[in-house]
Length: 69
Image (cartoon, rainbow, N blue to C red; front, side, top):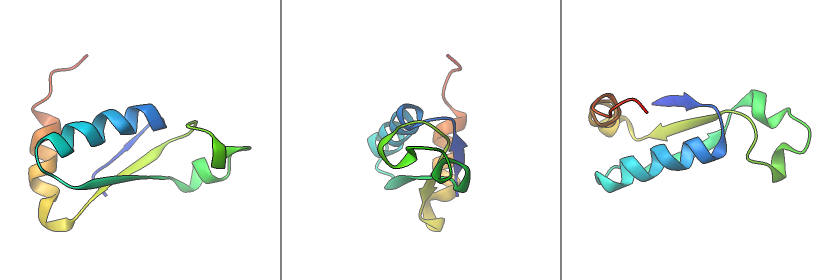
């Protein structure tokens, strides 16, 4: 696991950034998000950003290089 973010839209931003650098990544709901009411149809709740282990160090570098918003 690379990182946990607060919502589906935030996960999409991180995924887009990683993919623009050629790093394959996916987001999945955390155990907490799955337990939320209507979580299956909602972007509410935290997401885990996952990358292949061989890409983990590079993915961390990409995220650390980003300017804070």
